[in-house]
Length: 181
Image (tube, rainbow, N blue to C red):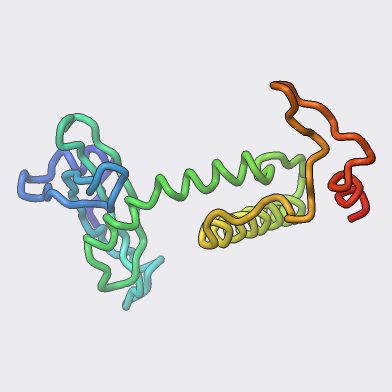
């Protein structure tokens, strides 16, 4: 069985034809094009069995403008998965990292102090569930458009008068109505 060593050494041996220009998805400025090289790694019978259901892949992403910048990916995909599909999945990495960063900031994903796997699993599951709830709620609010964030019956006790802000008196009917609700 051949041994490849490090993945970067594997791709330095790749012929020029192995590098193909592909888009890994649309970004803020249009398609994100890179040069990609992919190689299907050999089957390991002890791990995969005689008839594997999945294949291992090694992918390399090279910048078009700076060819010395190369990123590497290892993939494990069902038999029959094409290189285009692997490239599109690799392109979703940034969205996934942004999701985890948002979960850390908004839901305390990284704020656990547990010593056992069960406690860690519970914390991570609850934080990700809270993040999913917040994402769905935000998406629904965005779909409604400019939804009201202040109930229609609420009137602020602050009033602008003669160029400055003042608190409305308690005898103001709008203020009394808001305080009784």
